[in-house]
Amino acid sequence: MMKATAKKWILSLCFLFISAMGFAQEQAEMADVMRSNGKIYVVVAVLMVVLMGLIFYVIALDKKIRKLEKNSDIKS
Image (cartoon, rainbow, N blue to C red; front, side, top):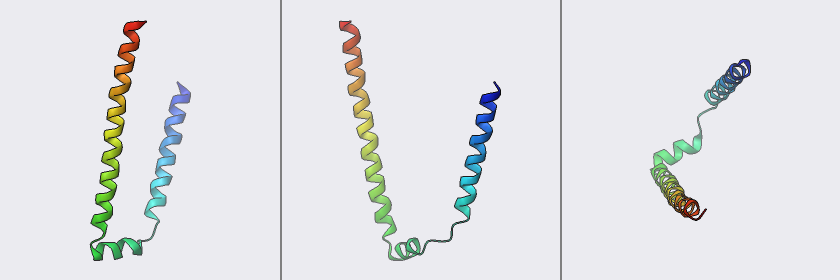
């Protein structure tokens, strides 16, 4: 029981330090330039397409694995 509590505290402290480091960063000039040119929307769109593709791939893979597991249970 004590180990679980210690793990939670350590994990909480890690997240606290990571977030504090994120606030310490300076403003990125590249982001300002891309925002002013309107290219940031292209970057966001490409990232969304890639993420959606990965999500669809994982869903399709999950369906195939379920089908294989179902067929494996019947034959066993």
